[in-house]
Amino acid sequence: SFCIFADELCASIVHCHRETSQYRAEELQALKLKLFSREEIQAYQSKSVDEMWQHCAVRLTDAVQYVVEFAKRIPGFRMLNQNDQIALLKTGSMEVVLLRMSRSFNTENSTVFFDGKFAGVEIFKSLACGDLIMAVFDFAHDMCALKLSEQQIALFSALVLINADRPCLEERGKVQRVQRSVELGLTHILHRDHQENLMPKLYQRMAVLRSLCRLHLEKLGWFSQRYPLTAHSLFPPLYKELFA
Ligand SMILES: CCS(=O)(=O)c1ccc(CC(=O)Nc2nc(-c3ccccc3)c(C(=O)c3ccccc3CC(C)C)s2)cc1
Image (cartoon, rainbow, N blue to C red; front, top):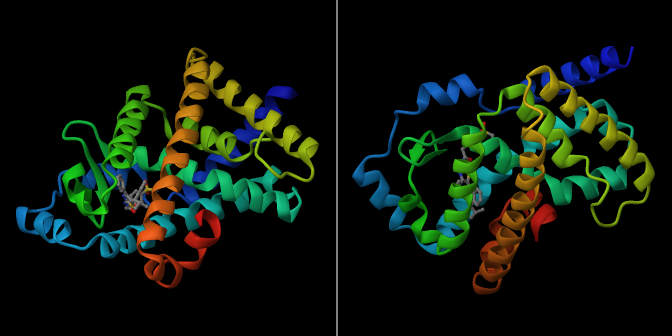
């Protein structure tokens, strides 16, 4: 009966992931050979720092919105209290975006899906945060090496989000129970896929995700100081609410 519970839980989380994935893995695969021309790359590189930051913040916020939708459809997540749902999204949504984004990464030519085509690091030059961009690309490379299936990414995303160790949770015990059921769901499908050895690697990747998000917040802090007007009045409200 336990296996039936785990199967049900996995199936529902995979379903939520598919419905809210923004781009399907097969769609991204089909777009992989659409690269930006030299002129297009130059156009991005000649954008000012605040223009490029604003451009990216809008796209990133789109991706975050789909993660919020994913979370809201996860059975265990919905039954948590409102403030805890917001606290988990505040600290976890960027991590899930980065995890999902690694599906849109082409390891052959180190490009990532951006603005309808695949872009190398050079396109992001005018963001003036090369270390963050390199770290995002390295992480995506690392994740691709694990060759996770969509089902494994779905369960891993839910586990990244529903984390009882996050700060300022009011009903930590409840979050712990949901986290434990998702953990069991993930171990259940890794066992089914004969890939239990992935579990410790996934926990390592969670630590890398946390450091990536700290770096993103650090850079956003630097940017907001240099361009307060853009950060306060031109960034999407959800981006400011979650990250500022
Ligand atoms: C995520 C769901 S999906 O269906 O796979 C999908 C859906 C849609 C897309 C298209 C897309 O929005 N791509 C973006 N790429 C990057 C990016 C940028 C630098 C390096 C690597 C990727 C974006 C960012 O804004 C970003 C992302 C991570 C950290 C930092 C930043 C920039 C800072 C200034 C906020 S948005 C891609 C993938």
